Length: 352
Image (cartoon, rainbow, N blue to C red; front, side):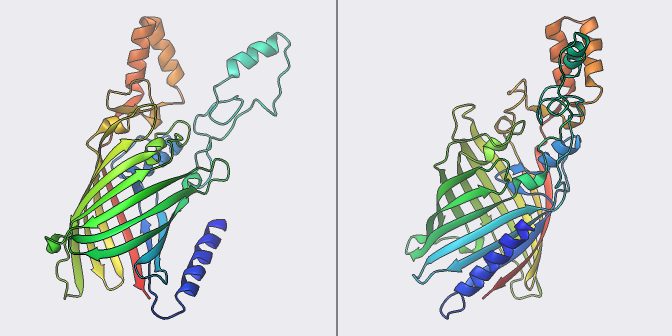
């Protein structure tokens, strides 16, 4: 309800601003099968929540409203963009632990049983089974920005800043970027555009157990081209190619590389569009940052992290030395980084 209220208030605010003449607003509402941000697909969080292996396609739908509206000063605009997930909205006990002291905490069943045998006190109100804080609703958030557009003989420019605010009331975080968008005066048929994003916020790491730190605290460079075919027909077709380079702004991994290569095909009918996207991540090292081996191009497999895995480890330990057992077990419970992701989205756009 709170999320819906935010959207409605933003819409009311936007429309009230444009009640005067000489002002314009661009508004869209999009539903996407998976939220992609600079190469990180949030469907991976759904896989972690549901104990399923990462896949090329994960249905983690989200509603994404966007408003761009002009201020009285010509060229000055403000922007609102939000992401609100539609499923996996409740926390889930994904680790299947029996007794732990907090969500995501270590299993304490054996130590509690041992303590009870020796007469030590056990507090069931503290040490019990917890749901992890893993609902996708915890990753809902909004961008709010302001920027200035102007046209020159050497191209079109936009410069401004925006802030991302996470709406999770249990673990809010926000970060800010300054950006410059540039469209050169040549090759207009390809609509070339360069974008530079300078992040002034330190990487706070996102959430425990996930590589979400890469989605904040980073500097980013993007280049894209697109072209509209059949502009005078009922249905227009717009292919688009975009590539991005990330430089992590942190003191832990400091990794940099091409984070995403996005190829899309959009079909436009009036105000409605259908977009098919293929996301490719060539640099696994950017995402392989939170497991035992951060250079093998593998991530912990959510389908093999819990359940009967302890029995597998114990069986290996009876047969092999500890180092060998750990190496075999870590390899068995990991999966190769999924480089290609397929995303489908539908949008409705209107201008005032």
